[in-house]
Amino acid sequence: MLGEKHVIEHSSAYRTNNTKRDLMPHRVAFIVGFTAAFFLGTPAAFSDGSFRLAALLRRPVVFMAGLYLGGNRYQLRFVPLADFSDTRGDRDAAVRDALQRYASVLEQQCRETPRNWFNFFDFWAGADGDSDATAGA
Image (cartoon, rainbow, N blue to C red):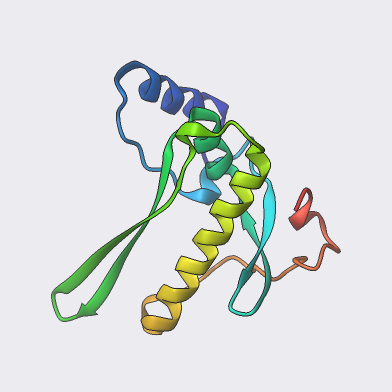
């Protein structure tokens, strides 16, 4: 998990030399919240920390997947999800929209290549708002 020190290092690198960084959504320890998004036909709780960090830093977010095609073949896919470079309005709404786009792209990939996916996080636990998993959703 990335703590505050690592996030500060990421943000410093962005500001000083405009480098590109990767950040997995569930790895932002101190700003992780959860937002509900529709996924596979039902509301599911997704970590929104990396989206909030991108919005704060005014950076784009890109979905990346490496799909196994059999044998020694792989296909990389990149899908732009959000560009927070001009977030003048409601930042929370922009984060919710980006996260829903992420869930939609992830769902599309899961349906297209179902044997490429596994999951260790229970998206649906508390997605109905009954647990702390979706606090702020």
